[in-house]
Length: 123
Image (cartoon, rainbow, N blue to C red):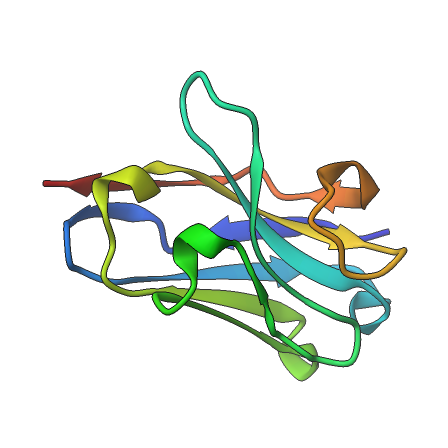
């Protein structure tokens, strides 16, 4: 099994940056694709970015392309989300998740989830 714990959220002004981390405690972290999702109040959870099992990190939601960078370090059982040029529309609870069926933006394919970390961007 995998247990995930996010950290690094907070309050930041528009144009600022935050770096989120997600630490996994399972023994098979490198067998999972990893994704970041976010959920704003009154909205469904949406895919933000993801890495495949081998470390390829090339998939991003259009809303964050050019601003966010996802990476993973299997040796540390950790996935990161570097968020630059933050906008008020980025305000949400951010979740990391693990997929055993490969990288996909469909949240239903992710078996393990963290509890989320709040990101608030003020104008």
